[in-house]
Length: 255
Image (cartoon, rainbow, N blue to C red; front, side, top):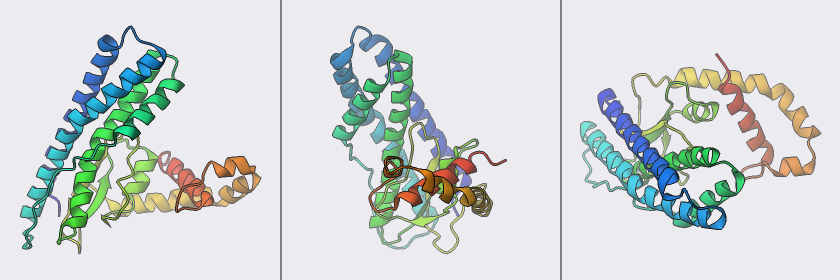
């Protein structure tokens, strides 16, 4: 079982770090880039976003590795292993995403909000990667789960309904602005966290799936090829992606 106090301390630390990153971005937008526009603005924003992720991402990773070590010690794992913080930052992906947002938004407020959401995802993903990368390398092979915050969106509720999973090659599927918390548990027989009710989430998933399945196929059949093509993802069927999105949407609207 994950210690509840340890989890809450970790979640608060990640939240505080994300808040600081957002405030720093706001300062850059308000002061450092106030006289720029067009390509100059896109280039400067890209540089700023990379710099901010490289500043606040490692802080999130450090907090995550501290959680990992504390949880491992508390679980009494006998095998030797030294967890390390993730240091990987994909500058090219950050720049591409920043420039894409800059091309979409006409107002500074809209652009600032979009980039702020991206920044939270990039920063918190370094904490996620720290947990899952160590879980894959660690002989103890802990399991990870995404714990949704109060008022979490349907997408995060759907991911959370999977419960604890083994660390695989894929990353924690975090979206922009996401404040949910990835955790690891070394009790592979009965991983748990007080307040994280997987059974209730799975019931919610089942109800959401039942509510959309009847109409989903008919709506899919009525789409043209271009609409269907927009749901294509590597390694996953287009209809499966469409149905997954419909289920996630329904999960977010269930009482």
